[in-house]
Image 1 (cartoon, rainbow, N blue to C red):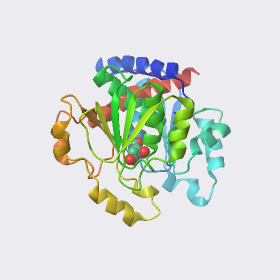
Image 2: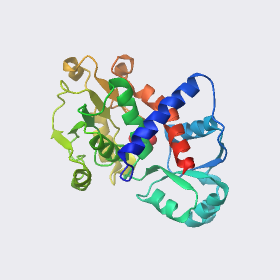
Image 3: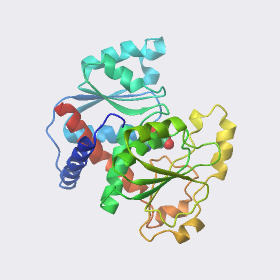
Image 4: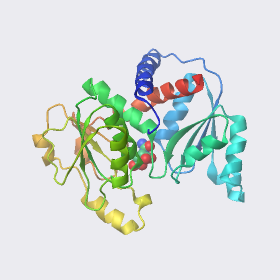
Length: 293
Ligand code: NCD
């Protein structure tokens, strides 16, 4: 999310709108080429929505299965990427190490899309998040976006801050103790944009237009028990929504665990399943743009 410009984001939103119409009319695009999905961390939405998007664009999809690949025989990631580069027009990659997609992009001649690199970035998720806010609220500028969950480890949050700051949204962070966002990230965001980021200790949602929630990222904790303890205690309170605006929307990149009580799923606030569906048109837009060069 750090090297994409505002005009490119807007272009992707316009394309995504067109893609929605194409999907709703039961049509597909006639693009040619192969997308390889190289996922070395678990994924449901990112991988499957990219694969769906690619097929709707007309591309062939080849899925790399790490457990039955030559990585198991000791082949290096570098050699793996060099091979896939020969087969693919575009590689979508997810990896537990920060900077992995950038590394792959340096090696490969084909386009590489970052589907999440460790705790660093998840740019296409942010495009989906912003697109969903824009669809629901008609604007991003001045929107009061409250963000809660594991702000220390979640790559979705790190990308989202750049995206929201780019469009002058107003950001309020509410983290469980010890899971606050790192100073480095705040500095980086502030270096690029004159952002308005506040930090708060209590759940006071009365001014919020959007509440964005993430799970506790257990896989990025040194101490799993600590993660499980926080996850048990951390949850959006249904009571806290009493003071919320009528048209508050709750977003979540998913998967959600216990941080959103099930009863919220059936309220008008819950927009996270719609947000997940938006993954298909937004990722079609990204694929089209990337392959256009
Ligand atoms: C997120 C991820 O992988 O970072 N999932 C997703 O892509 N929608 C969020 C998460 O795992 O918590």
